[in-house]
Length: 78
Image (cartoon, rainbow, N blue to C red; front, side, top):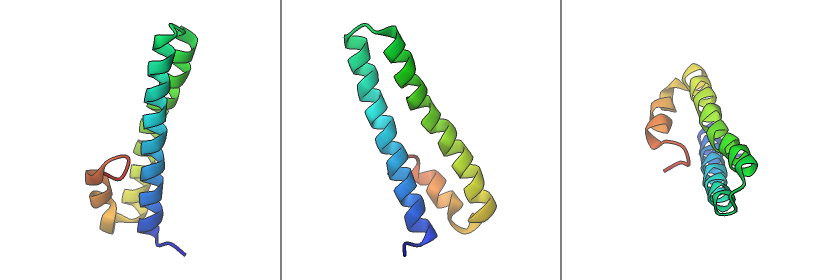
């Protein structure tokens, strides 16, 4: 079973992948001049930031010993 830190890294990578895919779809929607799709994919893109912020708060509450390391690494587990 993965450790808490390993699972957090997995979540960071998943959020980074979602954000990257959403950026690609925003670009595709702009090429097609589809404002509804631009808006929809923009919501996906920006929601990753909200999830990141919420998860960061939970990290500091529950895993203070490595929360700072995770925050400095940033979304996507860079």
